[in-house]
Length: 104
Image (cartoon, rainbow, N blue to C red; front, side):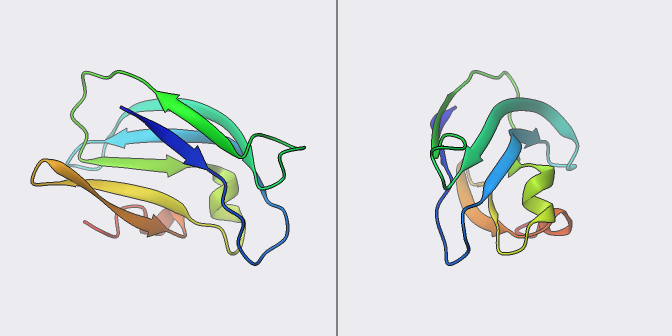
């Protein structure tokens, strides 16, 4: 899997999110793998705003989620979720840990 993760500025002030991870889940919503990304910030003086991600996995996840405890604790911050549908991934926004699998 490869791509980028970006901290996009919204209407809120600078936001830094610590310990960002890409978490892979199977169809039963069981965690099968985690890849650490590090910190992201809308202020590049505090942490990178964009991180390139490239990793290989034998797992065939149903869900791929961008997660961090900071994301769930901050207001007006969302993360992306991706659900495998017919061999491709559909994207959706996640605003709380309770909504991680909202597209499912």
